[in-house]
Length: 496
Image 1 (cartoon, rainbow, N blue to C red):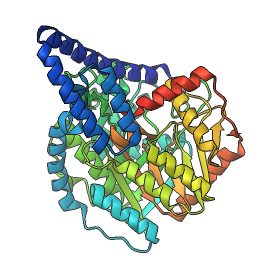
Image 2 (image 1 turned 180 degrees about the horizontal axis):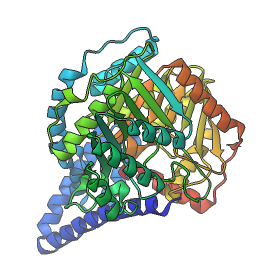
Image 3 (image 1 turned 180 degrees about the vertical axis):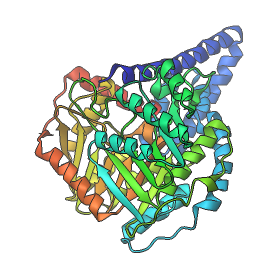
Image 4 (image 1 turned 60 degrees about the vertical axis):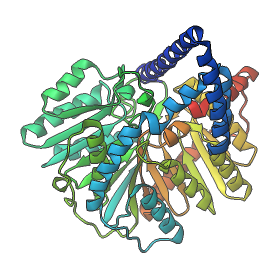
């Protein structure tokens, strides 16, 4: 679904394959002219296999890397080392630690009250793992479809007085971008400061040079994250998948949608794009501002005066717990995965998940199965219309595996489900985090963790409306060759 969104994935993957191919060719030439080099590399690869078997935390990762080592004829050592975050992202991680330390002085102290014990423990985890603090005094609004959220973003930007932050994985030519540029041009003429960041890998093939020029001519400070045509760089696979909008420090937005017409259902396409969004008004907007500013500094090396953009909110009387969070290679722990696992494990009555992809590691699969077997009402909503067919094969194969344990699986007919929502009876996480290995270990993602009863009721209603439309499947039938392909892709999923 969407030629451009498929093209950008193909382009980025081809570049990574090209880099790997170049490495293998150079390795082969070195071995040809210096045979001793082959034996040295073979010995290093054997040591690397031992290291992976001992220290890789996930069984699936152990198998995937071991298979790669066997097929690499001794070059696996180089591939493994160059793909490590400490190598290809070590310098940026060091820079982020300095940026985060500066920001943490302004973030505030950890304080949580008036919530359940499970929510308190989740809040402690987010603070311990990434320094994200819980907020109160924030009103929230859940949008079950992205178009309403995107229209509201335009309206709020149109009323902006001081500044606007925009960060998205995909920004694409189209009706919505034209509307946004028109509003931004007017606001910048009024003196509003606008910073906008997009991922070059995500936007490749859908954001034209002319559109970039139009945006810059308005006066927007437009920056690119993760350039597609980068030097030899395995970090190309670490993409900025976040979705953040902040207006005047008073209003903020997160969700699964991108700035493309697909999400707003504003162009003719196969089926309907089912995405969601969340609006924040109040203290927790500062959490989104901090996430954006840290990423901006990491990508641009520009030092910002954070005090210009925080403490601008209007506090509300809402006492619910709201925690904006962001995960990525700059944080040592896979924070988004950890939060999802906590929500799954703490579910006692129900666990509802909506995601376009289902490519988790073995621990998350086991946790989902265990909950269903324990009598928890576990329901999973997946697309009835796929976008990337190779990922869809793996998704359906994993869903079929979960069906055997009692998980209820819904394929939302006529819709490409792009929402990323997980909820149990006490809390929910809404944002850009897919249930897949890339989101957990490679991407920069973000979301909002909350226990607001009104939003939980709205999210529950959204799920129930999807359930009511049908699509529940008792069996997932695939041709034998599809199962073989899915098994192979699932085996390689930790490396994708």
